[in-house]
Length: 246
Image 1: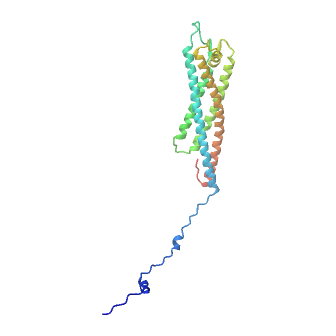
Image 2: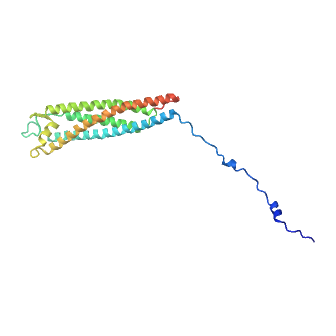
Image 3: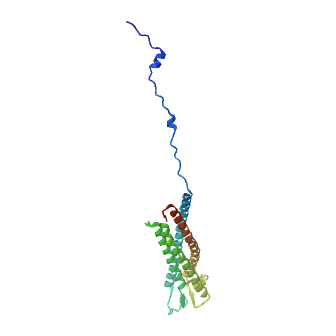
């Protein structure tokens, strides 16, 4: 009975299973993805989008400012008229607080101005946040332009009309407007009725806010032209790409 000698280390190595040699260099090669070309039209479109965003928020901010200022004008004018109605006495009384002829047209003009301006701003804000199927920029330009021009005309007319009547009646002893009459006597706090100081303050605040709205509406008119310029740029971009996106 013969015994085989134990295998040598060389034979053990030769009997081990050989590992297949892989070429790992193929795994190192990754597919190179190049970014799409960035054309000047893309730069133009990105700039137009940024300008449209600035235009949007500028209009929203001006509309909110106009709405708040118009609401304050309405409140001041309405409160002044209410105070006048509650303290006005007929000519049969011997101690009237008001002159025989009180011109309420300046106060009515400021009240109408506040209502109109606030309504315009509210309509525009609703148009901004209500989704529409058509082009948004063109629609907002169409709404904003007439509103801004009409608001500018209304505020200028109200300021000139109210200040002319008030200054004309300032020195009169038997006539006056709410502003001229109450502010004339409000400095005499000892003899002036309590409501005179309040009416004078409210009328002055309303007049100052209408003047402030003139500045706001001048900016609105300028933004109106800017909006049409941006729309022309967007249309030009759409025509170059074969589509119109306004």
